[in-house]
Amino acid sequence: MIELFHSTRTASYTLSRLTEADRTAVLLHLADATEAHIEQLLAANADDLSRMSEDNPLYDRLQLTPQRLHDIAAALRNVAHLDNPLGEVFDQKTLPNGLLLRKQRVAYGVVGVVYEARPNVSFDVFALCFKTGNACVLKGGKDADMSNRAIVALIKEVLRAHNVDENVVCLLPATHESTHEMLTAVGYIDLCIPRGGRRLIDFVRDTARIPVIETGAGVVHTYFDELGDTAMGARIIENGKTRRVSVCNALDCLIIHRSRIGALPQLLAPLAAKHVHVYAEAQAYDVLAANGYAAKLTRVTPDMADEVYGTEFMSYTLAVKTVENIDEALAHIRQFGSGHSEAIITESKHNAQLFQQQVDAACVYWNAPTSFTDGGEFGLGAEIGISTQKLGPRGPMGLQALTTYKWLIDGEGQVRG
Image (cartoon, rainbow, N blue to C red; front, side, top):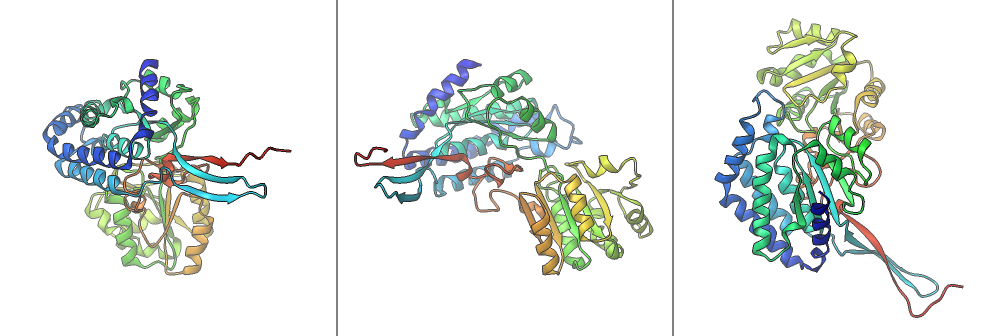
């Protein structure tokens, strides 16, 4: 394993010699090659899918389709043409002694990413890292191993065609042992980004001897305020919950003001049509049951509450919590939220501003669904992850988040007294 890390570290030094035109050409070629090899990529993906039940919440994340591969190719082209922060000079100033100081954005060097059943991440990570002059070490899960191998083989083929060292991308074996080796690769990997569920992120944080940026896990809430618009709320809740249930920005818990409990059947009617299983505490349960909620409905008892409200479902499942006021909603989010994305539906500017000020999360929405938490939707092109921590990047991480900076100091022979 050390030989792999050494090869990637050595290859990373060559990336600074590439021009922006070189990087663009590689990414555009990769986009074309992806569309030209759809059948081969789908065949590898079908091998992975054959070993996973369609009922598994990760199945949708694992699955590639012709349209998803065309979308990946479009994203690659988009990244290729984005403005590159690499080399940007900022915070320039001249000291009284005549020294000229400035900061310049530079690559980290080697970025490691640990992820689960999401083969599209292989494309995203390579594109963003390559654009910003970083080599990358990929550690995918065993569920997507055949897909990841086919993708990385294609990337390496394109790199060779452009006389770029193919070791700027490295795919590790899909084993627990290789994850541990990666997380302790001091001197070889500069930064590790885990993308997956809470168990994966906790393991990475607890094991790593290299810097880590936590991303991904999201217990996501939407609060329907006493002054919320019901028709708008139904649209936002449906989109937040069912657009793609397996992604980290999907809605997990609807919090509703007790005075608006009568609107709950209308708010959840689109979810009933899509067979969303609802867990609701007593009052919300009674209202939904009395109005014939058409999908599965489960009453939340006190002994179930912590588990239900602390779960990132990644499935057609939603929790409902009734609160007396906005302060109780905020307290619930503080207890169960993961710092990812939270939303309020209200016509009150005062309540919206209070919510956005008080909620401690990377992305806080007013009258919009949390499904917008995405690098592409934020105009960043692709994303390497959604950071839920406060130190360093926060929220969707695009190109700039994959650069650090160094100080450049120009003198004319000054010496320090």
